[in-house]
Image (cartoon, rainbow, N blue to C red; front, top):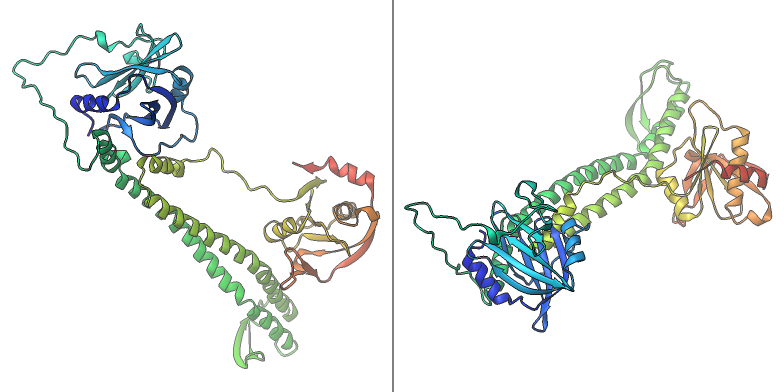
Length: 473
C-alpha cells in the first residue's frame, strides 16, 4: 500500500530535512533511491521507492546496498546535488508530490517525488521548470531532459458533482518508535517486491533449482566413480582370457570359466571378430581408462560436492537476511545472465606449429591440472630426466605419428622450462599419457612412466626463438 498524503506530511515533519546536507546518493534498484543526509548531528538515509503499490518516502534504518553497476539517474544526482543543502522539503497540497529544493553553490535544483502508484517518478528540474533528468524518462509527459515539469502550476482537480470526498488517515502501524521507524519495519515485511517473505520465496526457488541440477550431476559422477572402482574386474577378465588362449575356439562369443582370483564361475562376452589376445587387450585398455579416469571423476565429484555445500550455505544466509534491499540486490545478482560465459583458460603455455599443439606445464600445479583435465591417453608426454620442472605434452592427431621436428621442439621446451636449462643439454624420456601412473602418496603432479623411450637433447636457441612465434595467447 502506498503512502497517502497525510502520512507523507507526517513523514516529512519527522524528517525535518531543511538544512540537511546530501552526503551520498545510492540507487540500489531501478525504482529505489536513497539520499544519505546529515543534519542535527547525525547521518540518516531517506528512502524513496517508486514500487507499484508501495510508493513512499521515509527514513530507513537498514543498510542500503550499492548497485552492482552505476545507474544513470544516481550518477546524475551525484554530479548535481551531492554535497548540496536542502532548503525545503514540502508536499504540494494533498497531491502526493514532494518538492525537495537543493542548493549547491549558486545553483538550485528541485527534486519532485511523485508518489503515485501507477505513475510514480522522480524528476530533477531547474527553478524555471526545465527538466534536467528523470528517474523514469517519459517523453509523453515531458519528463525527459529539456522538457518542462512544474506541478505547482497545474490547476487543482475538480471533484465530480455528487462525489463524496475520500477521507484519509494515518495508519496505526505495529511496533514502537517514530512513524518513520514503524513504516520502515512494516514495508520491509509487506511491501510487494520488497516483501521479505516474497523475496525469500524467490531465493528458495532459485537455489532449489540450482541445487537440484547440481545434485543430478553429482549422482551421475557417483555412478561413474562406482563403475571405475570396479575396474579391477576388467583386468581379471583380461587375465582369464589370456589364460584360455588355445582352449577356446576362434569366433566364440563367450568364455565360460572359473575366476582363479575368486574361485567363482564367470561368463565373459567376447568379440568373435577378434582373437583372444585382442579381446584381452580390449579389457586391459578399458581397465587403464577406468584407472586413469577415476582420479578425474573423484576431482570433479569433490568440486561438485563443494559447490553444492556453498550453494546451501548461501541459501541459508540469504533466507536469514532481514534487510529486503540487500535481499533484493542478491536476487538480481543471482538472476543476472552473463553476456558470454567465460571459458576457463588452459593452464601453462601453448604452442601451435604445423597443426600440432604443444602444451607446457611449468610447475607441479600446472602439470597436475593438465594431466587431470586437458590431456588424453594418446597424447605424448615428455620430461627432462633428473631435473624437476616442466611436463610437455604433444596433443595426438588421428592417424598421424609425431614427426621428428615436433618431437625436437617439445624436447627443447622440456629442457628450457626445467632446472636443467643452464646445463645446456639433458636426457629426456617420453611416452604416451596412458602409460603414466600417479605416484601413490607422492607430491602433486608426480607420475611414474612405463614403456618410456629415452634420448638426449642439446638446447637449440634458434628453435626456441622460432617457437616463440608459434605461441598462443
